[in-house]
Image (tube, rainbow, N blue to C red; front, side):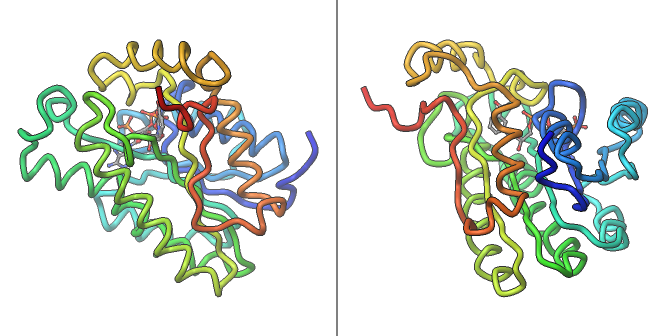
Amino acid sequence: MSNLLEGKTALILGVANKWSLAWAIAQAFRREGASLILTYQGERLKKTVEELAAELGASRVLECDVTRDEDLARLSELGRLDAVVHSIAFANREDLDRPFVETSRAGFALALEVSAYSLVAVARAAAPLMSEGGAMITLTYLGSSRVLTNYNVMGVAKASLEAAVRYLASELGPRKIRVNAISAGPVKTASARGIKDFSKILGAVAERAPFRRNTDPAEVADAAVFLASDLGRGVTGDVMFVDAGFHIMGL
Ligand code: NAP
């Protein structure tokens, strides 16, 4: 522990279980001395997230389904925050399973609402709580700018999310609030399992990435520590790749 986040309070959205990238980030933030507030999406996950939160001595656990305005409103009552981690995405399984051209209007709207608009809504609730400035961090993927088989509407949502990062960074910069995304390499999580043939993507990365292996969630978490800490004070509006270098590769 080097106490990079000592004295800071972080709100982390998106812990579903021990495989979640948000869980790796919560562990690293705790290691660095942050106090934590975790959210869960619905009753189904309440017990699991409460147990995980207790493991890290989180100061608070609350429900937040980002499609519900009353849940988002509850975030604005949390008290002072220094960091927010937005680690949330959703698309209907059928939209990750059939040709992109078949994406329905409702499926497109839902994927963009949960995976991209939610960052804007969370930022609106959290920014007034960052009275001393702070850092907002979201999780994105290479599918925002390259075509990855079956990533489909989620790629469009991630492109929108990355654009939202830039607009938020521009507006919140004068209030000393930095907004960045981490583009993580593929990691086997519950969400990733929803993508058809995900194991083929893992295999391709292990074969071709400069590191010849996949991404360790702890690497993503340490990048989040950097962005949330004063070490990241010069960085905003950026997409930082933590993907074993895969994004630089051509043939
Ligand atoms: P995960 O553990 O399944 O996390 C996704 C989280 O989003 C879950 O906690 C999920 O809750 C939550 N969520 C979905 N709909 C929500 C809603 N309406 N309100 C609030 N929360 C909601 O999977 P993960 O891979 O760690 O994903 C975290 C982030 O990393 C996502 O943005 C994902 O796109 C991104 N990412 C993942 C990878 C990868 O390969 N795993 C790579 C790059 C980026 P429920 O479980 O209750 O639905």
